[in-house]
Amino acid sequence: TAPGSTVGNSAASRDKAFVLHPYTNLHAHETQGPLIIERGEGVHVFDDGGKDYIEGMASLWCVSLGWGEERLVQAAAKQMRQLSSYHIFGHKSHEPGIDLAERLIGLAPVPMSKVFFANSGSEANDTAIKLIWYYSNALGRPEKKKILSRQRAYHGVTVATASLTGLPNNHRDFDLPIARIIHGDCPHHYRNAHEGESEEAFATRLAEQLEALILAEGPDTIAAMFAEPVMGAGGVVVPPATYFAKIQPVLKKYDILLVADEVICGFGRTGNFWGSQTMGMQPDILTCAKQLSSGYLPISAVMVSDAVYRACVEESRKIGTFGHGYTYSAHPVAAAVALETLKIYEERDIVGHVRSIAPAFQSRLKALAEHPLVGEARGIGLIGAVELVADKATKTPFDPVGRAGAVVNGLTQDNGLIVRAMGDSIALCPPLVITEAEVHETFDRLTKALDAAVPVLRG
Ligand code: PLP
Image (cartoon, rainbow, N blue to C red; front, side, top):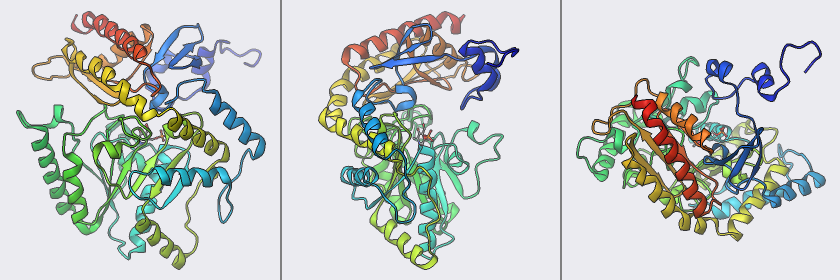
């Protein structure tokens, strides 16, 4: 820091002095300050005091291969030397982008035609919204532009994708959502099912409510619905059995496209390569990011069906340039790292690994439902959450909502495990390469933190 500055020299004090943190309680940060993470190795990260943490969230649901994967370092270095940066606007292109598009089309859960690249999940979903509007115009249906999302969905933070997101903090104070974005019901059985309602009956009711919403809005005004196969940031919500089997015919009936937001679920997380496969979704558009590059570099992708692509080509024939794209769409270094990531997934059979580890992960997770603070333990594959409640019998939340989550989050960190508190739901989403022994260590540390939280929260 500059001579004469009153800012201390520690990373923590300089952080407080200079960094405006994303997705953070800014007021609390002024007193609390940051945890400085210095390096990573496998499923572990280490802070600036050398303390070791299991990264139970794979950073933000993304570092699938863990830290220090040398092959990704080499792939980046090789591409940096050959063509460190270039764009694909107009009619320019380069092989890393082409190879990655071809690879993704080959891996798609349903036939897809083309890939558009962006840098983040938000940008991918924002692009999908624009493609949908472009498509509606192409078909001569300018009134068919509304987009359905769901309460507690998370689709990003740009003006349009924050509107899709169904969490109050993303709307309040930003004057969102924008027009034409509609939120339907969250498919969370524990919170939203009627007393004694089976998962199947709940799914039937959700499909009926969706149809009622579509009819109330006017089917000719609704273009698409966005859905995460498993909701992530909304608290890890696994939809009830038969949910997508029941809502997809409703969408088809009214000619409404389905967008699968695979930003968290894509690339093995739920025990299949795509969450769409686990949940029986047949999307028209698929967005992905995060584990596409194991989180090593920012890159995301939007895959579109041939019907959507062909209509867009026709529109472009009429009006000219498709006016959307990012400087770094298909950035060659990010694309090279993504390609190497996909190669590693195949060589190491990452889906097979997830399937072999998931039973231990899920059985330790579900066992936490017995803990006095836990109302529900839910998950699938290598993703899960526990929801903390003040009263298990009545499912009454702690007051205020979020305090219990913050307490457990802090104690978990003290115990050498990084989790993510979303309200009073504590999420786990470890690197996919986690071993069974590391899964047990993860849950041992979480259980210790939950035990330590009992006297704090119950007084
Ligand atoms: N969609 C989902 C399902 C996500 O979980 C996220 C981020 O967590 C996003 C979109 C937004 O991605 P990004 O933070 O890369 O913009």
